[in-house]
Image 1 (cartoon, one colour):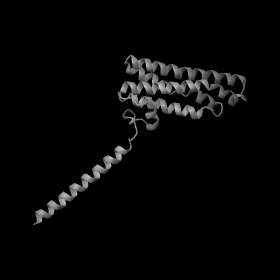
Image 2: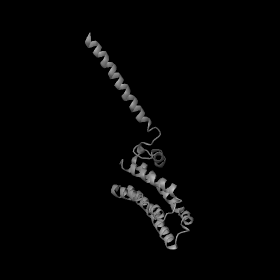
Image 3: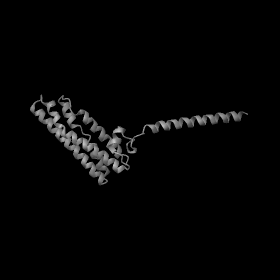
Image 4: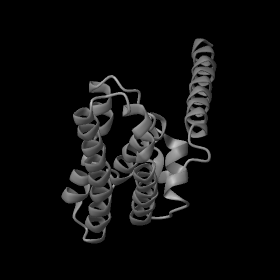
Length: 174
């Protein structure tokens, strides 16, 4: 008789464990509903899903993400004039220093993203990762902070940083 009680208990315990495992797997799977498979390791999954724009393979996901980031970087460059009122009270030499730093920073970010796209086409993973990492430069933000100026582009610059981070997450799945 004792073995039957043990067997019933064992079956009950086994069923309970299986139920708990199934529940945790379901909960884990729900985290990724609506998330593109190439964005599961991204820090900003919903933004990443928008960036990869329905891509069904790694190359297209990477290309779409970089292109979306390049569009934003170009937009930020075109908004650079918004820095002028923020630096108007600084000494002319400080204004010029910030203008120059921001101009170079925006140009370098765009160049790094364009180089990343070319590296993707050339299947050059090292160059791709190097230039995507370089695209995260915050030299303009740093220059404004150094002079105690609130960055009028901080919100959009923050989004750019998230997009570059997402690009790196997609690329590193290759």
